[in-house]
Amino acid sequence: MADAIRGYAVKAPGAKLERYDYDPGPLAVDDVEIAVQYCGICHSDLNMINNDWGMSTFPVIPGHEVVGKIVAVGGKVTSLKIGQTVGLGWFSSSCRACQPCLSGDQNLCQTAGMTIVNRHGGFADRVRCQAMWAIPLPEGLDGSKAGPLFCAGLTVFNPLVQCDVRPTDRVGVIGIGGLGHIALQFLRAWGCEVVAFTSSDSKRDEALKLGAHRTLNSKDDAQLTAAQGTFDFILNTVNVNLNWDLYMNCLSTRGRLHTVGAITEPVRISAIPIIFSQRSFSGTPLGSPATAAKMLDFAVRHQIAPVVETFPLTEVNRAMQHLESGQARYRIVLENDLG
Image 1 (tube, rainbow, N blue to C red):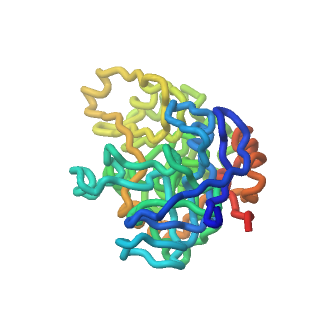
Image 2: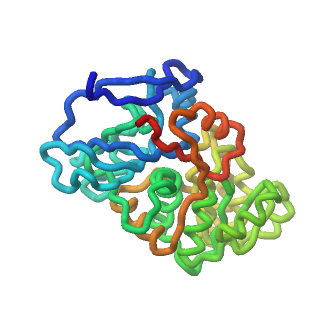
């Protein structure tokens, strides 16, 4: 297999990643092939490794925060050229014919392909995707740090666009981790008054440096009670159940509590506070290709970048252990050293 793609795969739920090569077959006419330079690690990669969502097919090569160069283009691809530096996130294809796709909401396509679901991702020397989902990196963006923008970054940027968050809004961010630390930077640059909800006083100084104007201790019900009725928008970035009514009561009239944290348990919220103050609870997935491009331009304009730790791809298991330990500050990026 002279043209085999070399990567690291898990062959059973919860197993260690090990070297795995595969033949990708002919390149589809509307696809591109990317030589991976960097690939971020997301908690979703760990979910897929453990089959937490019941949709993993083994072996699977994780990795959906890719930065690399185009090395091959399909016969019908005219939007990208060999040698361009691009990024690839969670989505890797869409049907381009359904109502969401035709409306520019390709991320809501019900048959969208996901980079590490039923296909192999970016913990490898090369990866493929539909050309539409390979987003060119604008000049001035550091490729070694850009990978997490294509998942974590887009996840927290998309709500600003979809929910019409305004520069005059007071916005709270729940969780100062892989997603939250980027959300603080985006919201500060967006012009909002930004408040970080964190369960760790040790993260207070970090949150302020990242863009928060102030912090609230999310474990202190008294602090949350004192903040009732003061937020226009609260963005939840954690994937655990919370005291939802307490956060809902922190919203002002017509305020919105919005989650991008993939909570697997049912969310229980009292209806009365929602009805009488016309509040809402909502969620969004990652954004469309157009929103991704807009996010990258915004990041360059305001010099926003994820805080990353870098590991060689060949040490991917050590990097995954670092992620699982909860010690990552704040995203991990793998650098391809397969040669």
